Image (cartoon, rainbow, N blue to C red):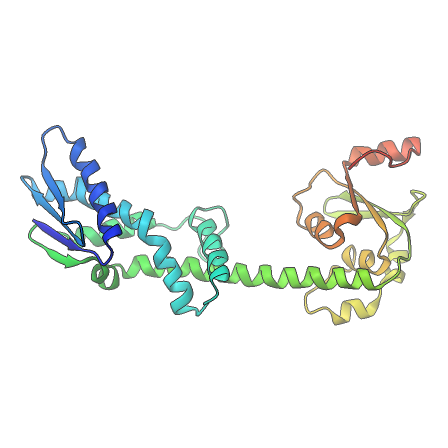
Length: 292
C-alpha cells in the first residue's frame, strides 16, 4: 500500500480521480485506490508492484502535478522568491511563464528546446522515490524531491519576469511618445509611410518622397536625448517630431514590430493600407475616402 497525504481535500479528490481513471482502464484490476474524504489517498497494489507503479501510478501523479499543482508552484516562486505581491502582476507574469512553458516564446537563455521535459523531471523524481509500502506527505515530496523540476519552473519565471519588465518599459515608452505628440502642433497634416522591409519611406500629402536628409532636419533633438529607451532615428523620431494629424501607413506585414509600435503610439491617427494601395494611389492620384 502507498499512502499519500495532501494538505487540501480538493487536491486529494483530484488525485484520487486521476488514479481511478487509470484503475478502470485495466482489464483485470492491478491496484485499488481509496480516498477518505479529507486528505488521504491510499493505493493498494495487488501484483507486479514495480510495473504498476511505473505504468499507472507515476503517470497519474505526474499528470496531477502538471495540471493542478504547477500553477500554484509558479505563483509561489513569483511571490515568494521574486516578491511580486500584486495579484494582477502575478497573473500577468504567470501568463508569460505559460508562454515559455508552452514553447510560444523563445527561451533565449537555453534555446527553444531543453533536453529534458518538465514531465520527465517529475517522472524521474517519482521513479527514484515511489515504492510499495511508502507513506508520505505530498508537500514534503515537492519540497525535497522535486528540486530539478522546481529549478526549471524558476527558470521560466525568471524569463517571464524579464519579459514583463520589458513590456512595462515599452508601455511607458509608448505613453511618453503619445504625450509628446499630444503636446506639439503638427508640422505636416499628413504623412504617407510605405513599409519596404526593413525600411520605411516617407511621402508628403502630395505623395512626394521626403528624403532622409529632410527627415533628419525635422527631428527634435530633445526628443532623442530625453528618452530613457532608444528611439529609432529613421522612423519613430521623425514621425513623433512631425506629429502629423494623419498617417497613411502602407504595409503587408501588420505584425512587424515597428508597424505595431507606430500603431500603438499614433492610435487613431493611423490609416492602414496594403502596399499595393500606395502604388494605386500614386498611379491615380485618388484620395483616401475609403475605410481603413
